[in-house]
Every structure is written in structure tokens, then in C-alpha cells.
Image (cartoon, rainbow over all chains, first blue to last red; front, side, top):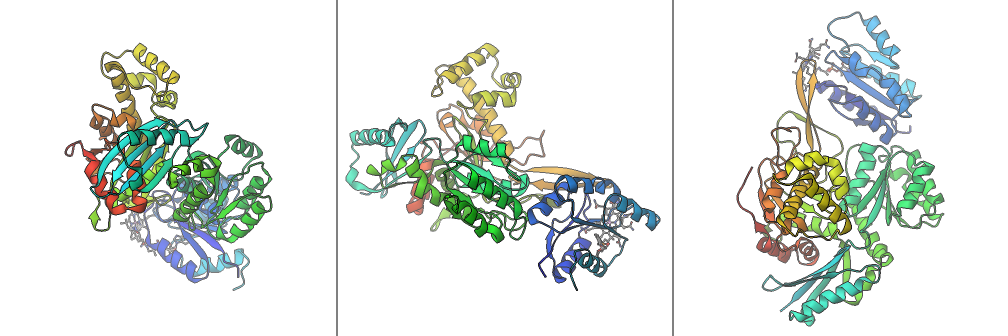
Length: 138
Length: 468
Ligand code: B12
């Protein structure tokens, strides 16, 4: 397959680095070109990275409970930057405490994310999803 | 006895330095007007005549080298994709090659931007865009725009390797001269400016010195080998690093206050000095040059005053200097950019302006640290170089060399408790290039680095101990 590029990062003022590294490993292993912008990443840096590297997808992590605030307007910014077709996933511990999952998920879908993952998601699932969404046989 | 003749062909003056390569002595110095419009060799000839009258024996010249900033220097336009990424990387590569970057363009060039580039009339264009394997469309489109333009200048291509040949093909088929080199940013935020710098240097040697009539100098010397800012950079690197067993002085900063710009060079890694700091942004070059086109002492004085504001500038000057004094002086300088202070008030004004230029130029050069307030406390993010631990600052340029209190000006480069986010040196030793030979040292470093570092150590003047 032609190598597909994904941009990874942990958004906002969030420093949780472990899951980010595991995702990097797993996606590289699965044959993706991974561009990891690490923790404490502002929205604009995800977008800049995606433009320069011609990325096919952006995977946003948020662990510290403030995902909703940090992710607001992300899709709109992508559209402004000419990335209207880019695949956007988000996952981690998206909201504070234990809120009902379905409504959390809906919130992020409404914000324009293509897929939203609950806490503790293992990499296998989003890898399979991304292959499907990008039309890669596997 | 063996001698080296080292010339700096500037936009107004041509300066010559003669070094005794055995005793490592500064044997003679001379200076004459460049008059580049007519012929650079006229200024050189005058310098040589002066040197001859001082008793310099031309048969003893082992090397006759020159650097030049004449005829507008090496004027470049940098083109990249995202402003903070490949466009910034391209700009740094051009500055690192000693160029004067007249403008940086990002994303797809518009028709208006293309027109502006033609009007700016750069000597060379550096075209970048996309990481290797990354975005291809924009650099291809920009190559097409350049191909369709009237520009007849060399284009250095340093973008996404996947389309490098295609980009070259587009330009070559429109009869543009292309120098193809490695990507300035092969991976996200990874800087790779050395190949582009080398390519620009090659363009300078193969084309620019002819295009600017500098080749005429070859009647008297071996070669113009680099733009003057490159020579200063080379000297900075040599003095920091040392050569062939002769130790260097360690990480340092050079402050070069000129008539048109203030240049800052740092030779330092700029790693965070505090724990728990997250580095963000494009990687920093170990040898970094920044140029502030709005902070010169003469040509760019109006923009300098504008940058600070007149009231603020007055407030920084000694008591007894009135707004009228300032205005009169500014007026005088705009009539005669070669003006040298003639009385205590003018000297005081010059010092005051130089202080401001130093402060702002260093603040823009060094990195900054930002406190990111999360909902549960704070974390730190660093952009650029942390130079708080840097211990040595070298000053050069006419204002500093001729000033009564150069250390007062250089002190402005230091860290301020009031602006802790700006990562300037906390305390440093100040050194003055009192003989004004830094570019000559850089030239000599190309052929005799060991002797050049010895010479630097001998002639750079320490202005005293550490101070805050
Ligand atoms: C270690 C840790 C820390 C360390 C982080 C060290 C570091 N540099 O990484 C430190 C001590 C610094 C820390 C600080 C804080 N933490 Co903490 N931390 C944890 C802890 C214990 C483990 C996180 C971890 O590494 N997990 C292991 C990795 C592999 O899992 P993961 O991160 O979840 O990632 C996986 C999946 O979620 C998924 N995934 C993640 N992102 C994405 C994105 C996409 C698109 C997809 C598909 C999948 C995906 O894939 C990953 C691999 O399988 C968790 C609790 C827990 N058990 O999860 C709390 C936890 C995340 N922290 C929490 C909190 C509140 C904080 C603090 C605010 C505490 C405070 N009051 O100061 C600060 C925030 C600091 C900041 N600015 O970010 C809360 C968050 C609560 C919430 N969201 O409602 C948690 C859940 C603890 C809790 N139960 O309260 N923390």
C-alpha cells in the first residue's frame, strides 16, 4: 500500500505521555507513517504538521479531562487550513470523571470528529478503523 | 615572513587587514570608500595603496581573500509552506548562508506575491515546502509560478524530495537555473539547513560574485569567498569551538550592530536549563543567525525609533537630552548615514539607540518559555533557544567599537527579572572586537583555522569580569 501518514499528539495543556507513545509504536508497527507532535500540543500545531506532511488523518489524545474545551473548533480550523477531507479521531479520558459515554461521544461527533474512543481503548481497534476509513485492505 | 590580506568589501567602505602569519600579528589596516557602482576594484586599489604606504610587502601575501556585503549583499527570498515550519526553515538556511532575506513567502504564491518578488529583485530564491513524503502540491504550484515569471536568477530547491526532480524539471524547462539540494525540513520540525547553505554558497561563488561585479576584485586578490555575515558567523563558530587542539571559548553570542541591521549570532545548543520543560517548535540550529532589518543605527533608524516609540526612547536616554536634540540628530543622520557622533550629546544618543537595538535584537533572537496553565497547575513550554546559561558575549560593529562604554551597550543583552520568559544570558563576560577584525578572522578560518583562533584570542579585548 502507499504509506499513509497520521499526525499524533496530546492536545492542550495535557502532559500524559504514555498512551501517546504506545499509539506511536502501534501505528508505526501497523505500517503507518507516524508524525508524533507529543504532549502540550496546540490545535494549530496539529494542523501545521498535517499540512507539511500531507497527512491523511489526525489522532488527538486528551487524558486530563479537558478534551471538550481543547477540541472546540478543531474541525473548523482544519477546513480553514484546506484540510477539509482529513480524518479526525479523538480518544483518551475525554471528559472529567465518569459521565455517560454515549452523550460524550455524541458531543465530539458533533464537533466534527469522525470517530471517538472511550477510556482504555487499545490501539487495535482504531488501527482497524483507520484502515477501513482510508480504504486500505488489510 | 608570510602575510595574509583579508578584505571586507562593504557597501560603503572597503576594509583591509594584513596579518603576519608567523608572529600572528595584526600588521596593518586600511579603509577606503567602496564606490561599487563603478567598480569594486577602485576601493580595493585604494586600500592596497594605503597598505603599501605603510610598508606592506605584497610579495609576502600567502592568501588574499575577501568577503563582501557590497551591492546590497546577498539578497534572498525564501519560499516555504507553513510559516512556522518549512518557510521558517528556509529563512534560517538563507540567513545561515549570510544572506539578507528580503521576504519570506508561505503557502501558494498569489499572482500579487509573484509580482512583488519580481519587484524585490532578489539575487537568489530558496524554494522549500513539504516534508519528505509530505505535501507536494504547493511546491509544484510555486515552481510553476516561478517558471512563468520573468525572474532570471538562480533558484535553490530544498523541499519535499519526492517531487524534487519534478520541481527542477518545471523550472529548467522555463530556462531557470536550478540548484537542487536536500530538504530544509525532511521530517516535521527537524532542521536540515547545511545542504541548502552549501548550495547557496555555491551559487554565491559561481554566480553572484560575477553578477555583482565582485569578480573584478580578482585583479588584486585570489577570491571573494563569502558574504560578510558568513565570515562573521564562521568566526563566531571558530571562537566557540577552537581548532586543531587550540581550545575555543565555549558557547557564545555575537552582537553585530550595523548601520542597516543588527545581527545576532549564537553558537549554542540552547537546550532547556530547567527540568520539566517541553521543547516545542522547529529545531534550532547550533549556529544561529538572526537579522533585525528594523534595528540598524543609520539606514533603519526611522523604523528603530518607530519600534520603540519616541517617548520610550527618550526615557532611556540620559537626563538633559531633549526631544529636540533627538529630532535634530535623527534628521541629521537621515541626511548623512555615515555620520559619526561629534559632541557628547550625539555620543549619548548613539549609545542610547545602540542599547535599544541590542536589547530588542537579543530578545528576538533568544527563545522564550511559556507557562501553560492547565486546569490543575502549570507546565512549561520552550520555543527557541534557552541561552540563560551562556557566558560570553562578543560585541562588534562601528558603534560598539567606537563607543566609550561598550559594556553598557552589551549589558542590554542580559536577562531581565521583569521578563523572565525571555531566555537571554543571565550573566556573561563581555568581549569587544576592538580592532574590528571579526570578519577577517572568519576569512582566515577558511584556510588557517588554527592561526585564526590564536589571532582571535590575542586581539579580542575582554571588557572585564562577569556582570549582571
Ligand atoms: C500517569 C498519570 C499521570 C502522570 C503522567 C505522566 C506522564 N508524563 O505521562 C502525571 C502524574 C503527570 C499526571 C498528572 C495529572 N493527571 Co494523571 N494520570 C496518570 C494515570 C495514572 C495513567 C495514565 C497513563 O499513562 N495510562 C496508560 C496509557 C497507556 O493509557 P492512556 O493514556 O489512557 O492511553 C491509551 C488509551 O486511552 C488510548 N488513547 C489515548 N488517546 C487516544 C486517542 C485516540 C484517537 C485513540 C483512538 C485512542 C487513544 O490509547 C492509549 C493506548 O492504549 C491516569 C489514570 C489511568 N489509570 O489511566 C491518570 C489520569 C489520566 N490523570 C488524571 C488527572 C486528573 C491528572 C491531573 C489533572 C492531576 C492533578 N490534579 O494534577 C494531572 C494533569 C497534568 C496535566 N497537565 O496533564 C485523571 C484524569 C481524569 C479525567 N479525565 O476525568 C486520571 C484518569 C486519573 C483519575 N482516575 O483521576 N497523571
